Picture 1 (tube, helix red, strand yellow):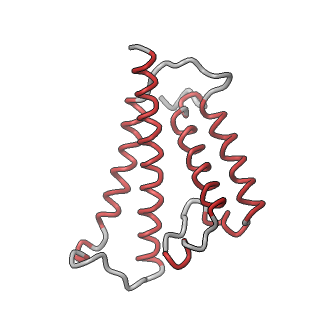
Picture 2 (cartoon, rainbow, N blue to C red):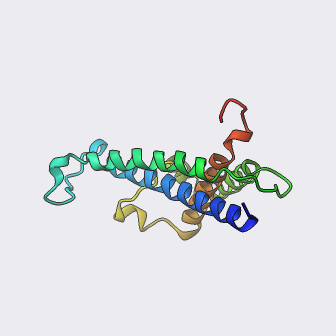
Length: 152
């Protein structure tokens, strides 16, 4: 396998993992808003499904992460450190940024509020810090097998 093919597979793997993380979080946030907060919002005439499709989307996204992890397992040279080091570094920097700018948002890190009345008030730097945190989580998931020999 050439370096271009290996790099392409790794980039696609990282994109799929990042997209799956966001899909799981946003589906979970919608389920939280619909079940826990008991909002009277229905997605249309097909609400008979009782929002089970969101659970299926979450399971499918988890399976996408596993599949992308298997497909993206290529041998590339490391740039000084492993991906998980850069992932942890990115998460620490973005969490520090969130704590300095808006400590109240740290409690909703894994469940971003997607309700339009609340989400539209979130400043852009905090949203960017959330995306950096999710990017760090992506790098850690991609290189998780280097953290433990039992994870293969």
